[in-house]
Image (cartoon, rainbow, N blue to C red):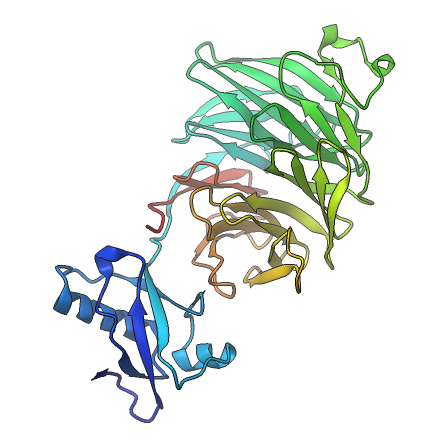
Length: 423
């Protein structure tokens, strides 16, 4: 048994290093260390073991997990907080540290950037001056699109190929517009104007097979619409209600769902026929989009501003007015539904988005001008503060794993390059 540590007055504890990253595996015999040991000292120890027992020669930076949470204090504080016994060998898992995202381009707009959506090649933004913009992922401005008569609050890509793309914009002018973009000609056509909400729209989300979209608005209604060219026989709305104006471009909802008492601020599809919404009325609702009813109702204690769902972890994160981000298991029937509270922002959190390739990672944007990169295993300290905005962050997006993107009240979009994901 090996003993290590410099603090001779601290009590000793036995630990065992374990890792899922086989290239960095060290022998898993117990080591005796002082309980006051901190992550930097553990990092030195693991690197010594790597040099002694493997071909790894360069120093690697690691993060350490004890009881599935990153060690951000001394080992003593961490095990006391979790009521771990110091009589038994404690498993210390280590993973290669996530590298800091690199600031890339700054995309300058004429007004507040309230929404952003990213795909493989393009960045779509919506502004308070009623315009939409398309940019390359390298930051080159491609197209400005007028059409709305009030601020654009939410945008989403529907489809994309080499020659054409389809996307939707939702606005405070009470409409959502479906657009077709001819990429080769760089021209857009308004295909459908979706009318039915009686107040401004706040959120839009596309389902997994891209056939339906859900919108939420200040009229408290959740509405479902077809995204295709064929305006099928709409169930839930009588045909007599159909508007014939605008050369047949007007589309009416397939279904309207009531339940919220205030504005719907965020929408995400969690399954083929399941939509999750959050609202200023302090609630999260899980809806059955086929039956039109509410499956679950989760009560919060503050207004919610945004919500996102991860198919990888099957968990929900929310942005709220009390500076906190909350992680929910929407299907949990035991104990509290809030599984984790993430605290670091100093003002309203406006936007949250999961990584699409790593079940532990997400980003958030807030009124404190910062975007933050989080790991769910480190609730008190984000991995990184992604600074650059000079005013409130109003939106963020991580649909393309290579780029974290945020838009704000400083009229800019900031792009950060994410280098890799944990193996």
